[in-house]
Length: 239
Image (cartoon, rainbow, N blue to C red):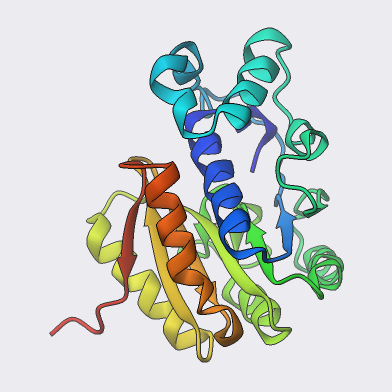
């Protein structure tokens, strides 16, 4: 996550998903922003929706107004806005920037995992998503990803996981199914779900004790965000 993205359309849906999940499940939430430095690019520029309240505010009026005021009136693009708003209360947050060097990142993640230890659900918000074969741990651009060994560490301490994932330039159905399959294979007894929007994907892996919350979250999303999220389950290995 870069602060320059704050308040764009992906953020609106992302926070809406989190709010729906919390209200439907009552799970305790730990948010790991996985912050990286702003880069001066145009990424995060999809804020035109804030000029269309008649179309967009109906999904979550309180969230919409918070983002509209911060971005359009105050020019504040910072995750601190959401933290201070209380919209995800009583969530806890981890704001340390992601280091690149492997040894520094090991220590950084140890602090993240310690802070998340008692949370039911951990939301991880990397710039891109789950690790790519083209980027090695500790090397250039690795700070933009969460790595499988990190997800497994959180899973092994009994956290359910929700991960932001950017769509690459490949077939979205095949990509989604591959990641759902990876979640099922790498996280023992996981119940994986995917929530996709027109731009990004959110991957949910529920611990066995949280599986019963899955239907409640789906129902809440369909009621509060009709047409904005598509849901996918893992369909098994391709024939």
